[in-house]
Amino acid sequence: MRWLVVGQDVDGRTDVVSQGAIETTEFGAGSSLALTTVFAASLLAHPNPGGQAPVRDVGVGRDSFEFRIVHWKPTHVASMHRTNTLDCICILHGSVDLVLDTRTLSLIAGDCVVNPGLDHGWQVGTDGCTIAIALLGVLV
Image 1 (cartoon, rainbow, N blue to C red):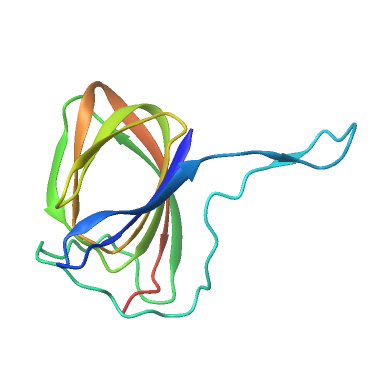
Image 2 (cartoon, rainbow, N blue to C red):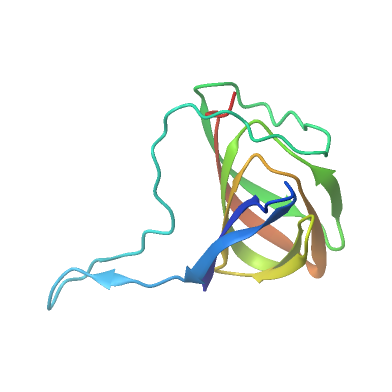
């Protein structure tokens, strides 16, 4: 499993700006609890960095939060777009390609992505894809 954070390169194009393996921390010997922090940040309002793709309204207003499970049918394509939300996404089942301005990344179950409202698209694999997504309306 891995985590990816989408950002912009020096030319303003979307790319992965940080990434790593998801590691689990256990809480002492004999503990039945383990924790994985995938991403952490201040939830203060931030300016939307913008982009070239059209803005897609995902129905989450400023200072709002939604947690969704999304099921995409096999070979579904979502063209390049951006949102006014900070999106925290975890692939639960299947596979999907994350399309950025600079490259396309293949994601599988367990992979996680943080996208702060930047240009991106999706190309779903032949088995479909299910994601969990937390949408935070913190971008203005």
